[in-house]
Length: 84
Image (cartoon, rainbow, N blue to C red; front, side):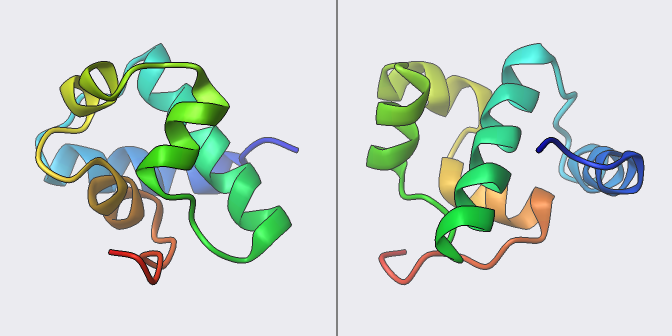
């Protein structure tokens, strides 16, 4: 499905406010999160994000330090999963 231009701009603004300069790998995780949310009506957990992306936890934490799922939630505006 992909993100609309308005969604991308809002995400870029929120990421900048949080001190994150979005690169290609960030966008990949953000779009995975959006697609997952659209299908399941909840944001994916870190474990699910690792499975969907095929990336190790360390790489995801490098892109979104601290709490990756929390950061993705704040940047995208998607609700936090119940597990967090």
